[in-house]
Amino acid sequence: MDKKLVIAIDGFSSCGKSTVAKELAKQLGYTYIDSGAMYRAVTLYCIENGLIDDDGTVNEPVLEAVVSTIKIGFTYDADARVYKTWLNGQLVEDKIRTIGVSNKVSYVSKIGFVREQMVELQRQMGAEGGIVMDGRDIGTVVFPNADLKIFMTASVKVRAQRRYDELQAKGDNVTFDEVAANIEQRDYLDQHRDISPLRQADDAVVVDNSNLTREQQLTEIVRLVEQRQK
Image (cartoon, rainbow, N blue to C red; front, side, top):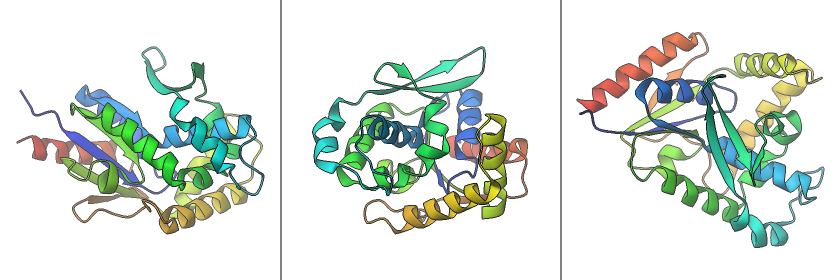
């Protein structure tokens, strides 16, 4: 029997981490954990409960008092072939993908006690192996001893176009320039936060998918998985 690996996929926003991670998990029969969705869910909680201002200022004392009670989970919809995120018993997959949440998630995800709580949950989920987890600090902080680490990237222009197309398909009234600005802002905040900044792990394999199809990048990562299993 092949060893059940812990696979960490890190990288910049809107570079396709979640898409390839989901497809990889399905192909391998592994559990997929979207760490970014967890931070988005906490951000949505903050927005809906008045804990974050328009400028990104978070009411940290109140959030710290309740963060351990926030329940986040995932289900797989076999008919739609998608994973869905739940927050305190409510399906929030569409809500957490809006530009409103995207504009504020970096302010919430940089808070130390939020990251500590999410990292603890992520480690519990992956304790038995056989998981694919994507995020910003999976290979550097959450699972520094992961069997396979991938660092995904793509140009800002390519990432902005992908995200813009996705939001347009959902009916969100945003401009390409707004999406590109949001991605550049998140890149800066993710790389410069004090706690668990986005960086490439020393032993990660870089996959630049600016010019790769989903099928091509999945084929490449499956090849890397097979190498690790031998």
